[in-house]
Image (cartoon, rainbow, N blue to C red; front, side):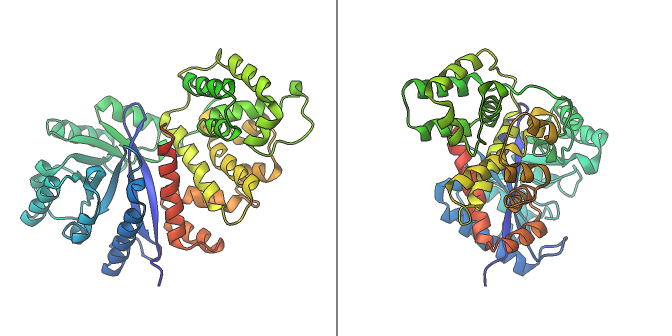
Length: 404
């Protein structure tokens, strides 16, 4: 029987909002919340090892760290030694007692090259013996409250560890944690930012220069298309420009490639040259850009067995543009007023309905590690858990391969 286990993930960021790693969550779809039972643990362990080993070096996600939750049984399991240690952080759950055997095992794993994180630890006498085994300590600021979290941080900051604030859900919390001195941050704020007043998202000079070079060298259309796929803000600007009244377009744009073919090399080069005037460094936070591109790729991969290439391009746009309200800090309805997109794309972006809606919903559920919703959507699309997991890891690896 197929193991019913799905992978979820959450990015971990530094003070500049650059992603330094992902917490990979292996959830059993049928498990109740609370304790992990032995059969569930074995199923999760099998999927963890099978998925990661079959992906080879790809799962390492470039230079990013993979944070993996382990309970006491998993900690002592030989399965851990099948994982490549150089980029693996074993996150010891707070339920694991700080016994001498646990402490010894942590030392052994660190000696073998693994990094150790202590999850939601509070500096009590019960857990103090594990502090000298840790590379990271996580504090749940939602549970502790900011005042208590700051006091605990102050007590622990002299330790040779990196401190991670988790459950960061608002911009105010992020700024408060950064001011306290936390090294890294994790939480829904970075994947689901608040929508505030409108702003302009400028494309980076690097993206524009790279595309200018490709166009001037008469590069293959595929290479130019990929250049746009690397920068969702730039793609949005191009589609908005090509759909403007001044351009006099009479037909609907179906994909990035379609837009490029209509625009033409000369017009594209001229537009990119003009864009250099407005390109700058004040674009959306790197983590937000990367989350958007990952969602686009994942949504596209989910549609491989359902749609032709042009339709899959639309899925990519649906996934990436689904975060434009956060990137542009304006409601999605206002975003879509600025660009003309196919009706199924608009339908998915506004209500997550229509032919593309379920694929976008599944991609978002994977980000949230919402096992019940993942299972429901995967079942409706007739996807096995292994396919969902393979697409998820492949999307993350693809984005890291872009060198963003």
